Image 1: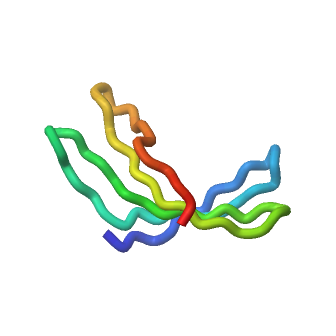
Image 2: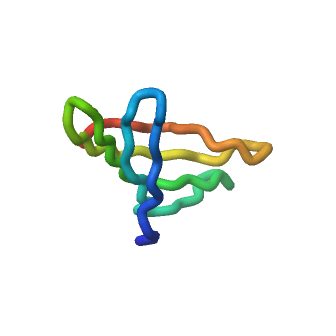
Length: 68
């Protein structure tokens, strides 16, 4: 997919980072997106990889999330 990273920030914790979609797939008529996200906080920078899938009704659910 290679889309531009989308910034995010949590004003309560001061954490921030970006989310980038790296692939999109469809299984059993369910749209899923694999992504990478960064988290910058007081304890340093972390990188994670995850997957989110669209459920019935259009709600997205995180189905996988782990540090890389």
